[in-house]
Image (cartoon, rainbow, N blue to C red):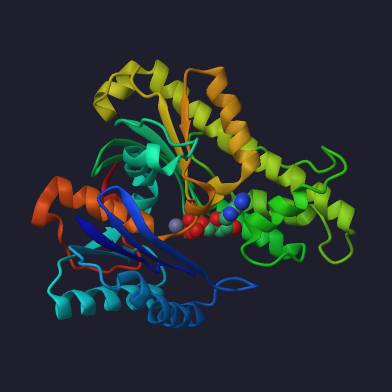
Length: 354
Ligand code: KG4
Ligand code: ZN
């Protein structure tokens, strides 16, 4: 089955083409938004990118299914991808499927395992349901039990900002361009000392995340105008370490709950308390090497298996959209085909709340 995947929810245009578990094309076009994403500009840039690149991806290939991001995301950006997908679908009489952006991030490592020999990626290994996914992106931060395809349970979520957003805002404060995460990671490599900057341990005894207070505290620690390069590098390193520890501690807390609270597992989740060993870290922030290293340490402490998408596929891409289109179509057949678009597409449509 040949599937075209179109991603245009925010500022990266993704156009991918797969045949079963093989990647035939995967084009990712990153937009430049130095001060943060400007929605109007983002929509125009998606239009240009799709006009420039879709033809080369789909040339001479028979397409069986078109998968496109239907939400959540910026309305203008979503419209560009959805209108292209639907127009192409009507004109060529090819079925199309609306994809939930978060679900695609969560399921990508599951899809990739079927081709891990070919993809030769060391972080891709056997992954079975149920697994737990820490989704860390620019718009979302949550820990989800992935019971099965289409069966999700939110175990933890942020009460305010997303972790990627905090990276972006803190980076901007010290004069780094958007997206802030990779720029903070890069500058942190030049650090000369550890522990100069100390951050609050927000919500350490709760299942939920909260980042807005941490963001304010971080911004208050350093004068973005007058700090020198060395101070900024040390700040980035301490901040990144703090975020990594915070994410790891929260996943450890949830892991212990799943391991030890048999009643919660059985009554709320319908699973046995010993069965979750696989953990996926996905979304843009999962590209961070310090965060990955700390999660690998956690995996060694317990009997956990960590799974990460390849770095280039942590941030938004069309491959994850095509991949989920395939999984859903395989499972549900033509009833999987939907034609919606919703900038605030609630994950609750897809999940049970804890
Ligand atoms: O998943 P994504 O591409 O878009 C959303 O769905 O939101 O995530 C983008 C976010 C941005 O906030 C960006 O700063 C962050 O991911 N990010 C990183 C890194 N690469 C991207 N954060 C920390 N370290 C990175 N290496
Ligand atoms: Zn995303």
